Length: 335
Image (cartoon, rainbow, N blue to C red; front, side, top):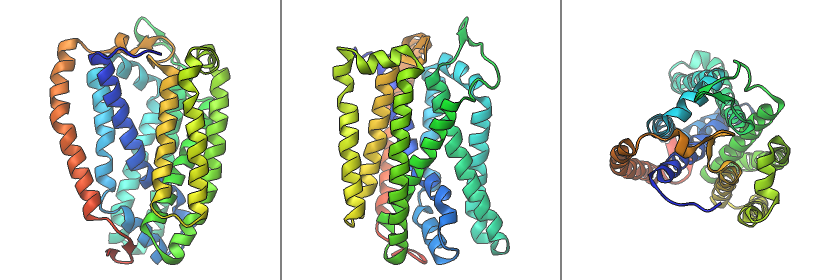
């Protein structure tokens, strides 16, 4: 489990950070879409939409950075993972398109608002499910022969990937609900808190099921979590996850406002840490490590300069957008 830092490892952490940023920031957007049918038609739905209106499209910047960075820094991984998950990637992109179109047209076409609400929910659900199933397809292993994908069109469809897809949907719903607990007030906030508690139990149960499934999914995964000395590196992850889960539950039941959202983000961070422990140093389990899939060193250096310039800019304008639109969301937007 020792990590010797070189350019390839640095790029692995950059891609992991971009993916985590996308999951966190677009996750609560998708979560609000997933929960949308549970909101009352009218002001409650409008306030939920208003809470993400200033930031939802900027949040997807991280998807571009994660996907583009994978293509540039780990081209072999990109060339293997995409053919293995083409149906899921296509479904995700179509879901994001429908979600984005519905978001805009919902305000401009009131006569068909019910249709756009359905498209907003459907697009969010499909995108979240596809993302979770893509993760599951990667974890269960991708067949590689002569540095190319050697599986079939539907290798990604298994009970395990369905489980990871449902788990991602539940996790995004938790992020969306806790975001609304933070951004709304009154009866709308109380409703969001109830939804957050339901999503909390669903997310916790599904995280536990996926973690247990991983132990029997591949022998090397069980070795990472159950044998020494790897066990000593891995043990803090489930312990911290349990502690954060307890803190999140207490915060939701005791009237916390912003704290539940940050604790939910912490659960996702620990989930990603657990993923890293499980597959490191593979980028395409079970056969391709990050060094096998990496671009040439000179290419990594060239791209690192670009990322060193652009990533601080992305972080700066993202932080500024959230700061400008801080506070509670009213019926007409932020106040």
